[in-house]
Amino acid sequence: MDILTDEHEREEAVRKWWHEHWKPIALGVAIALAGLVGVRQYQAYQLSESQKTAYEVYQIQTQLASRGVSALQEAQKFIDANNDIYGSLLALDMANVQIRAAKYEEAQKLVAFASKHGGDLLAPQCTILTARLQAQLGQYDDALSTLAALKSDAYKAEVAETKGDILIAKGDRKGAHDAYLDAINTLKAANLQISSVLQLKFDNVIEHGDTPAYKLVAEQAEQMVKSLESK
Figure (cartoon, rainbow, N blue to C red):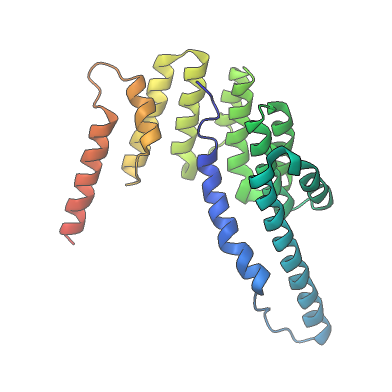
């Protein structure tokens, strides 16, 4: 089983943030009024630079999506000059290109860059992706240790599902079962949707006495409908 099958899932949250924010930045964000003309001018300069940087990142992302590996050199020049959130976001796009090319060690370097310079926004995703890459390289114990370092409750379900992926790749079917079940129960408790991919993973390791994931999803949907009707 390819441990990177679902490495894009958490990335979608970051991509959503990026695509919601780059356009307002590029179009111009109102600068808070300042008392000194010099301060206003400096802020205006910073905004102008942010506009240029945001649009440049967007252009390179588009090239990576369409040209893949052939666009990596241009992207590398950008991240070499931008050790910040912009460079980090682009580094993750570059990592995905390298993953598709099965160059996992190169992808690891890019994820490490994003982890170092991306701040709190990207740290959880980078941890999860690092664990998946380690597992892809057969470093299962290292992958589990990396994953265990992510303590945020907001990522509890994602961590559990990733743990299941690592364990199934390691050959630990029982451990994978428990991890996938933990992910499902976490999502249910938070009234969040159980993805079709997670359903398939759990049903692939289902044990006697378990409720199939598709039935759990149906029960979840029924409960949501009842909750809405009662309001």
